[in-house]
Image (cartoon, rainbow, N blue to C red; front, top):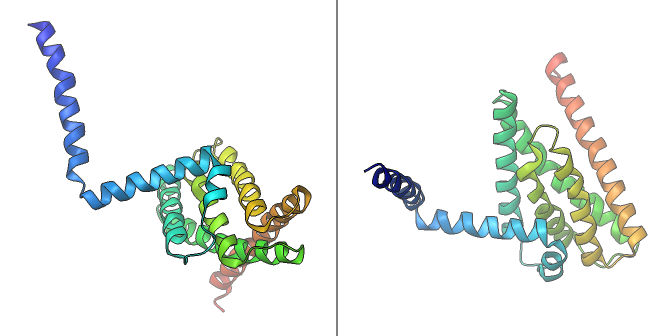
Length: 197
């Protein structure tokens, strides 16, 4: 009797798990599976991903990927800090950082005779944000944040066909300049809210 009841419990819990998955519409299940499959390739096989990544085809796919990654990070970071208003701010800041970072990286790469354009650069920076899935983790989030630089390096080197030193320079300068732009933007927003101008 006891053995039968212990055998039945896993079956019922498996049924519950299966039914929760089955409750999701097929389109949502397919989207989540595709997103996670793509994120795994970016995170664990970045050279393969960026070597086969199309450099054109519009902004829809990379922007959608970025929005999901930024959304997951924003929601989990907001919940972890118990400050829900931060969710929108973190999400918007993530998007702005990618657009600004892409412009800076493209400009610097082309100044160093890089062969890629803005769209290709945006795709690299947007897909590299797969690390946002883990950036929200307290303390440990620094590791995926730094890994973003590695992904940027691999992708930009592939897209712009620059030397190792030039690509590393582009990645570091892009991070620095994008950080300064975001900091200045945040400071101006704070000052505007304080002084109402």
